[in-house]
Length: 417
Image 1: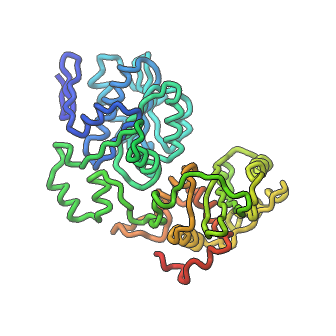
Image 2: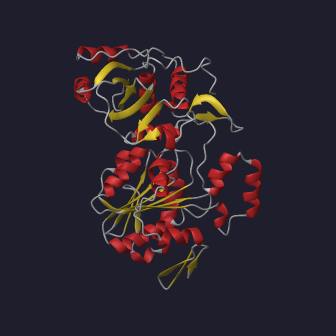
Image 3: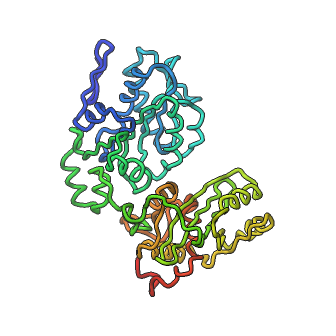
C-alpha cells in the first residue's frame, strides 16, 4: 500500500482523499474547469489525477500537460507527474521519455511543455489538457489559444490550476466568461486553508503582514488590482465594448510596432462628435516581407478613412523608409518618450474617451498584465516588467500620439500617477 495526504493506492487501485475544493473540480462537467486558488492549496498535486481520469475516459491518444515556464516544469510539474504516473501508477506501464518530454504507456502520450515556448504546443492533436500556473505572466494568451487549437478536433476538456497574478486573459477570457454565465466554463476558487495541511497561523501571518492585494490573490485566490499595474484605471466593464459598425466618415489612425516576428498594428476610429476613440482592430504577424506587410495593411484600410500611419521608435528610420518605398508613408511618432506615451493613453482611459472592441483580445490581455517591476519592499519602480513583449501596447502608444485632442486632456501630465 502506498499513501500520502491526497491518495492511497492499494491492490492497484487509487483512492483519492480530496478536500472540498478539489472535489468540486473533480465533479465539474464543464469543458473548461479552472481552479483559481491560494498558494499551496492543493492545485498542482490534483492535476495529474484529473488528467489520468480523462485518459481513462477518452482512451489512447495524445494529451497535454503545460505549465508556465521551463523552470516550473522541472521543479514542479514534472515531479508531480512522475509521482503519479511512474510511481503510483507504475503497474500501468507508464514511463518518462526525457528526450521527447513525454510520459507514455506505449499507446498514450502525455506531452509535457512550457507555455513560454508556445511553438512546442503546435505539434499534437490532443484529447485533453492540464495547464498549471496559467495565471502567471509567462503563460500568455497565444499559449492558451494554442492549447485550445490542439483540442479542437476532440473538443477536449481543460483543467487549469493557478493562483491569480494579474488581470490578463485568465480574468477576461475565463473568469469573466464564467461570471457572465457561459456554460462551457467553471471556476472554483478557495483559500490556501482549504488544504487541511496548510497552517492557519501562516495564513493569519500573511494576512497581517502582506499588502491586501497580494494577500487576496496569493492566499484567497481572488482577483485584485496588483501593485505596479500601469493602466490601473482600466475597467473591463467600461472600456471593453461590443463591436459595432463604424461610421465611414470617421477618421482612422493606425499605430505600428515594427518587428520581424511580431509586427503589431492597432487601429483607432475617432467619433468626432463625441470626442471618443474606438480601438476596433489589432493585428500581430511575423515572417512576412515588408511588401507583404504593406499589402495587408492597405487591404485592411480599404473603405476606411485612414488619416495617419505612425510607428516605430526614433531609431527605426529604415523600417519607416522601407514601408514608404512600398507605397505607404509611416510617420515617426510625435512623442518618442515611453512614459509620455503611456501618459496619453492613461489620460484617454481615465477620461472615458478610449474604448476597445472585445475582439481585440491581445491588446486587452496586455493591458491586464502591463506592470512595473516591484522593489524589495513591494513598491513599484520605474522599470516596466518585460517591456519588450508588449507589442500591441507599443502600437497603441504610437497611435494615440496622433490623436488631435490627446494633448489637452490634463493640464498636468503626471496628475494621474
